[in-house]
Structures are given as structure tokens and as C-alpha cells.
Image (tube, rainbow, N blue to C red):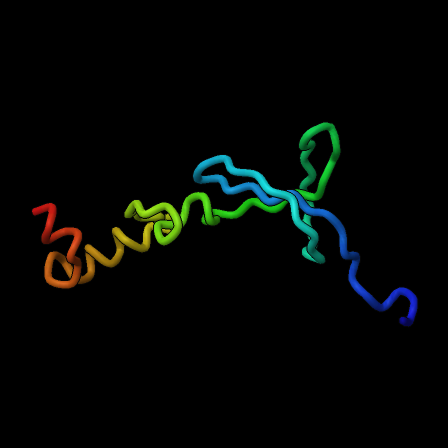
Length: 89
């Protein structure tokens, strides 16, 4: 392999911020933050959904709305387009 043309492939700490689940895997992702896990410092990547919090894997329905998309949808379409709003109302 040619030297200095490949990205740095290293261990990275991923943190699911919705349930504070942490896991370490190898990645080339570039990060600005670092965190200490089990006495070792790793580059840190914060994620919103992982296998620990995803409804498909947990079997629990949960609305993850980080940018107000659900509320924007409900304002735009009202009760006509949202099954959740109809079921609740």
C-alpha cells in the first residue's frame, strides 16, 4: 500500500445520546471530540439512534424528533395526515 494516502482507521467510541448506550468499533470517521471509556481515551461520535434505542430492535414505538419535524408535519397537515394525532385525539 502507498504510504499516507489512506484515512486513519482506529477505534472510535460511539454514544447513543437517547439512552446513553456506548460501544467501541473501528472507523475512519473524523471527530473533534474525545471521551474516556474504561480508562482509555477515544475519538467520540454522538448518534441519536442505535440498536439499543431503535424501535425495530426494542419493539417499542418511540418518536425521535430532533429538528421539530413531527410538529411541523402536524401543523402542515393537521389530523388528516397523522395517524398518531388521530389515535390520540
